[in-house]
Length: 555
Image (tube, one colour):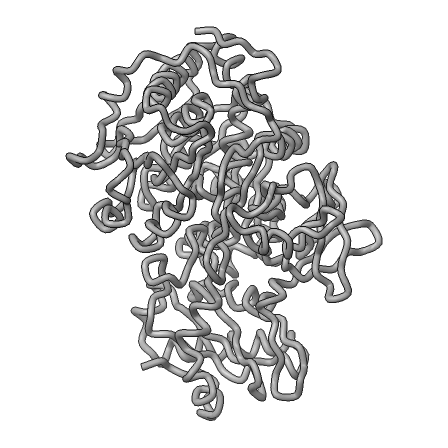
């Protein structure tokens, strides 16, 4: 079904309609189902469903440019719903599917959403109270059955929208709430033009074509996944696979055998720890140094993981430990760090082949200007910058200066070649009792390299020495305490030997709590919410620091 593609159609929809016309029967979206089968949707099928949902939205006679929220885990119909919202001339508001009900209600009310699209969720009944009763609820195919949800089949009975509504590319396309590790999320208003600029530049940086395959794993409510996966797929025509659950991740990865793969440092840590559970670190390191054996071993590992076809692997959402990146390069994975914020469509810096330096993010992307302010805060400016924060001009004015530079809140260093190295959020830095500045993130990365450490948080404002709170892995929790204590003592000595005297940790505190999404300790991309951890344990830090033991158990 043709759609005029003149100036009135925004470029991302123009690209989508082009793929629909040129190869309508090519499979585009591949969704694994609970019974082990897969749902495959061609460009024609996806377009027809998107047009019908768009037609239903138009029939609702919503005010022009209304907000429509999507609350769902990643799935094929998440993408279809997003397209339909844009076709109908509205603004999409993707929300994290792991939100507690009160936070969900807060975002829906703040965003002024007039329709809520509900999809695949782990616990619908827990989220349900967060949905306002006065707006329509539309259920995607993988949503739980609910009498208040208008089911997808009913929506698909609507006449398909023949022509996408006209829209200026400079207008707002979406409101994306920045996950952030502290404070209440802010709604970033991103335009069609800024999203297109960033994604189209990614196509050139990663040489993306319609022959590529990607696996959608990080939440689509996060800007990295939205730009690198959804937008690149819409522009290039590459095939998009999805993950059924965390338990099936490796099986889904093997099915997709992606050529491009995006993960957080936590994702890459967990994949390596999975390998380490099957092979001792020293044995593997020794084997990898033997030319023929090492190459064969690495090739077999990558094939088992489903990573053997990867052209570019990317780490996003947090600083990548240099030691971890070096490990992946040794086994043949071309892993690069990408840096950006929700406020600039995730588009700022990326590593380059031949210019890789572990611990450094890379060079500015094409069209990005950057500099450091007197406090070493990174400032960036490009066409990918947001329009501002929704309904918050004061915060917008603090984030964007008069010259159009975005104040990132990240502390950085730029070398003579233009390479960027980040040392963490400025808000994360603290001073010890002697007034010495402590930068926690590099210390945490050294701790996270240990196979028994799941999460690490270095704290200690005003203390003689900082300390590290550790959340241990499931494997660590079943070890006898005396064995685990020996492991942690060795780890503490190793880490402290690499630090300046004032940075050295006074002790490691093994938390009895499992830091999770549910208790608010982690963001949807598994970043630590440092403010939450600090507030939870602040009253006990002083006591732990004077216990006189190197390993403290939170009993």
